[in-house]
Image 1: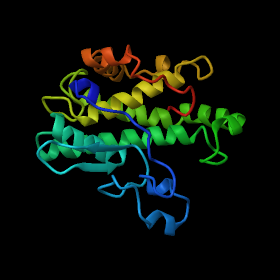
Image 2: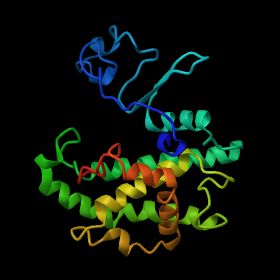
Image 3: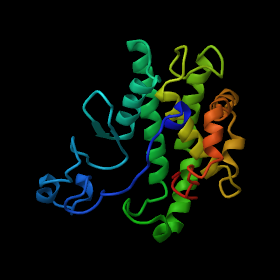
Image 4: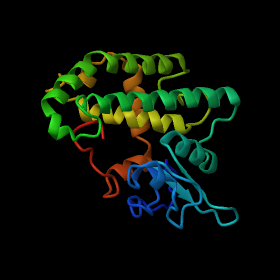
Length: 230
């Protein structure tokens, strides 16, 4: 969203960890540490990344974590907000379902223990992620395809309004992660095999947005890790 809007931003992982770090979830593991004094720059308690810290010129700074909360806020301040309560409800539903989807996909690579590296449970993760591709992944993709098919065209904003919203960026990202992760020989080229023509057209429509194309070709765009849809 930031790249699409041409916004200036800094991507940072500084001061996240430790007893006086910015993230309560990374401050030592016990409740007493989590609620103790945090980093001086924190204006609203943060649990885990990702988070945004927006410092408007003429208003108090805004600090919030959780992907959906970050995206909804950025949508409001950068022109990607739904225009009606009904459109917002649909946008929120799509965004949260997209985040559920990628969370399930990531978990399929970590069936032994969620906090354990995929590399330390690779055999189990490979088996479980293959099962995910053949079952739960299809349910999510066909659900998203049904939404796209119900809109005016396959290249219409996903929440049914006249302009793209944060929900379009949420859905595009998880589809992009799907293509990167599962469209390989190991997973029988699952995206190519998927029959949802309209969803594929929607994905390509979003991917072709000029500023996103510039971003994908820049050194600001980190490559996918190769596992866990990350």
